[in-house]
Image (cartoon, rainbow, N blue to C red; front, side, top):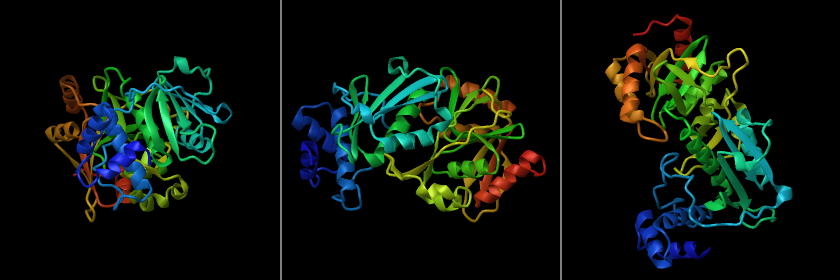
Length: 379
C-alpha cells in the first residue's frame, strides 16, 4: 500500500464515511480536499479490489456519470512519459467533438476501439494539439508488462492516478460523455433513449435502473435504429432528435434477458463503474446509409415503466404527467434550465405522449412494433 492507502486503512474504524476520511487525509498531508477525496476513493477501490474490505466497500460510491467532474485536473503536473512502442492513438469524432486518446496498453486500446467503433475518425491527422479533448493513459510504471494500474493525464495534468484496470474504461467513457455533453450548445439534452423505425422516432425518458438500456438493446436487435441509449439531444422548436449513439452500459442483471439476442455479450470484458455497478459495453450498431441522417423528426414521447408480472400496455398520458416525468428525469450531465423547461413545454404541447407499462421486455418490443405499424390500439 502507498502512504495514502496505509493512512486510510489505519483510520477505517475511526471514520465513518468518505467525507470524514478525506478531511482527515487533507489535514494530515496538507493537500486540497478535492485531491483528498480522489485519493480516498482510489484507496478504497484498491483495498476492495485486493479483498481487504469486508463486503467489497464501506463507502457509498460516487454516482456516475454526473457525480464527479472527471475533466477537472487534480492539480498535479506530470511529465507524460510513455512507452512509445507500445502506445497507439485512438481518434474519435463525436458530434463534431474531436477526441484523441493515447493508450499504452494494447488490451485497453482494443476494448476502446471495440466500443467506439462508430466514432473512429481515420481521416484526421493524429495531432493531439487540435483535439477538444486529449487524454494520455499510461501504465503506472511505463514500459512494464502485465501492470493493472494506470494514470490518466490531460494537458500535462493528472486527471486520475493509479486507476485499476477494471475501472479504467468506465472512467474514460464518463470523461468522453461529459466532454460531449458540454459541447451541445443550445440543444436540450434529456436522460433518455431514442430509437427510430419506419419513419417513426420515439424517445424514452427514464431514470437510471428503469430498464431502458435492456429495452433499447432488444429493439435494436429487432431492427430498430438506436439513436441514443443515454442522452436524447433535442431541438425542441423543430421537434428534432440528433443521434448520439454512445456505447450502452449493460449491467449484470441484464445479461440473461439479452443473451438470446446478443450471445457474444457474456464474453465481453467486465468493467467496474464508480457507482459500484459491474457493466459490459455494447456498441450501438450504426444505421445504414438509407436511414442515417443528421436529425430525425420526433413522433412521440414514451415513458417506460417496468413492473414485473404486469401485462404490457401502451397508455395515453396527460401533457402534465409527461412534463413532470421528463423534468424529474432531467439530463444526465446538467440541471435543466428555465429556458429548457419552456422549450420542453412547447415540445410536449405538439407531440403525443404515452406510458409504456411492461413486465416483459419482449412483449414491450412487440407492442412498440405494432404501434409503429399502426396495428396497436392505444388505451
